[in-house]
Image 1 (cartoon, rainbow, N blue to C red):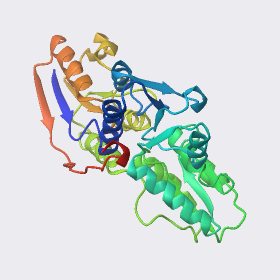
Image 2 (tube, one colour; image 1 turned 180 degrees about the vertical axis):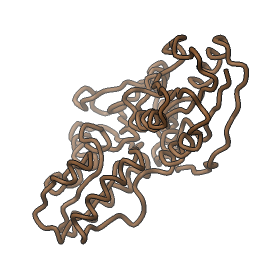
Image 3 (cartoon, one colour; image 1 turned 90 degrees about the vertical axis):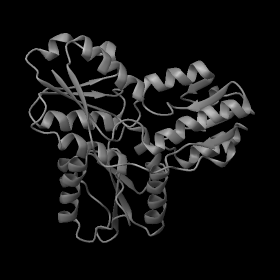
Image 4 (spheres, one colour; image 1 turned 135 degrees about the horizontal axis):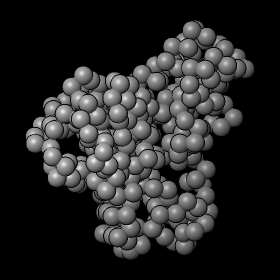
Length: 306
């Protein structure tokens, strides 16, 4: 059995920035540092930060006054900053700059009086944050079917935004419907789906026909990891999403000659290495890195922790 490792895979620049923000805050301000919501969607990362002194909360009311609280890479609605101020908390914003870009676009379109159609999943924390920029003007559209049904007050004043972690193909299908229905649809100056999401999806597509089974290493809460599994499955082979080596099932590999591996943008490389080690125990004879699009982007840390 051969193993093909996709590149790029794992941490993107936004995830690296968010994790380093928590680590630097702990070093600068001491334990504990509070984090609203999971800093990124990966339990391995979260538990590592908990061990270092981070405390994760869903409600800012749980954070003692005067404490430092970090907002996750997924972004938050403006009223969350106001809530933190009322509770006398010191806020540190670890939102990925590419998500911040979508927030800026939402404010810009809302100021023009546009209805905003946000392509994405309504229950995802990133989408909740963007909707919070203009809740009275934003409608979430998750599928081509919803795009066919959505109604807007004024088809002449309408704009579209996209969740950053969607499948490129999935988003395009929705966009095609919206463009057909609303010829005056305004779009962002630059694509919303992030470079890392696009690059990882392309790496999986490029291995179609070469692998008999896909392993996508990532958390079940991770949108981009779920999209990678779906893209792997679209090639007609089994595709499994797993957090780490303990989730591997030996029966998956019966008759399998080549396994493709990728990992979501919030998955640490240590999880990948552990899966590869377990596959060697199960009979993998070769492991090959498959070159993809190089990634050199880095984001500046929040000023509070520089």
